[in-house]
Image (tube, rainbow, N blue to C red; front, side, top):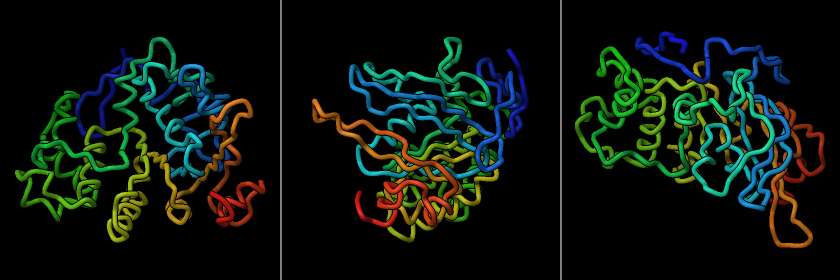
Length: 291
């Protein structure tokens, strides 16, 4: 078991996935940065149904990668592979290889709970705990056994989520009394509090108004220097505004049955995807001709 010091000052025991150095160095991604994830021929099944097929791509470190595409193309299913949330679905299985800092994420010795600590998730609808604002942030670090001042961890997490100034005098109040946008930033702060390496976001702004959405987007730009972010969004303008890389997924309908299987059409820098895509299907989608 390797022991390293976490950024929050506590001792972090890492028995399965080593963030400081993996057993091998992954190859650079397309934009020249180090890859956090390398995905090779990944398909996701629910029972006998293949929901996503043959995905091969890499996710660069300290970048924002957007997954876009029409409803039912498997974006969320694919996103959940990165922190093994699909394991919680009894009939689900993942085929292919996902390497996380060079380590097979689905290897037999990998602790899925530890993976989910390192790869945090923010969901579509804000889901604060029915506790105080303070306890929402402190809960994760307490469970993880973080050392040091909990007050400092709470303050730092709320500051990084651009929420501290709005709630510093209300820490003992219920998180349920916050606005929707504040609740979503609280959920981001709660995720940040356990010092993840990656943050997954599943349509984090779909339930928010434009002003709250703008604050979340600004926050994403601020924190990507510390975290790798993968976001699922139906909002192409949002993908164009915030992401560095964009992956476009579409669906194919099997002829023998009315089932939709998601597949990756194109993956490149966001600038290229929105100005000079290499596939006609991508161009049709980003220009609003379908989807």
